[in-house]
Image (cartoon, rainbow, N blue to C red):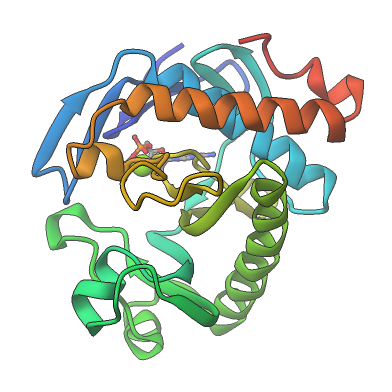
Length: 253
Ligand code: ADP
Ligand code: MG
């Protein structure tokens, strides 16, 4: 296996099949455009296993994605994609940059889910895109933009229901999409507490309820414990929902 690319959270390896990649989930944590860096031992295993479960759940519900199997606790076999340089963000409750850029009070329930596109360019600080800029930069066709938006809203519905049944509120999340060898646009990357804001519905305290990367961003402590809690709930719910065959594609980790 040859290392193809090392990002902030994962290493991508090629395999003997050019259509298949292996993603290795690291324990490295970054925030605020990598201005803040840390290492959370065990995070990679949590994120890989949470992502694998969620990708399986989404596949079962008709959302095409890159997941093939989880051969070990930190590794996921995926379809090789040409990732669009876009971060598709869906927001249900105001948090993070939406608040700092608009003045909306953190924690405000949005009247409808907001879909936003950000330019995946670390050197530019991943800026918010307008539809006109997206077109100007040729980042996606208008047909792709429409598909990404409706697919992201469908995923929001499915993940919101799933996390709701785990006693978790899906505040917002980030998705990445890419084209496979058949030029099919698929959901890729990861879905984990690094990329979703999740609040424990059983907790009213604004800091205690946070079970995602905001614990690292805001130095709230117990980061791994929060990720472990999410994993436990996601696993329990998947045992109820996923057929036995798909469960065997996920490691016992
Ligand atoms: P980043 O530092 O950009 O957040 P990560 O460490 O999270 O990167 O992931 C490594 C890279 O893998 C990212 O550029 C991501 O877009 C890419 N990637 C995710 N899934 C796939 C896939 N199925 N095929 C190719 N690249 C992928
Ligand atoms: Mg990433």
